[in-house]
Length: 111
Image (cartoon, rainbow, N blue to C red):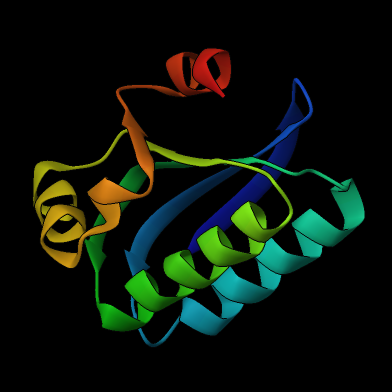
């Protein structure tokens, strides 16, 4: 999995490519947490344009980061979801708590 982080408009942007499964979920969690700690960001955008598969461990990592961000008064958004990943997010109930956007620019404007 390739993961990159950056700051835009005071919001942490995480771009990921590959599968977010049990083999890389700890790496994703660690990268996300370190970026939150070092940046001081309160909100985050996950750009999942390159994510083609997410399993329950990946959902758990996303949910855990959502709880951390909202506990500090921030918001989280996900962009560029592949149809199969979006369906999984909807089935898992993430669409009820995390904002979905078509692209990163749209998400940054709305957060």
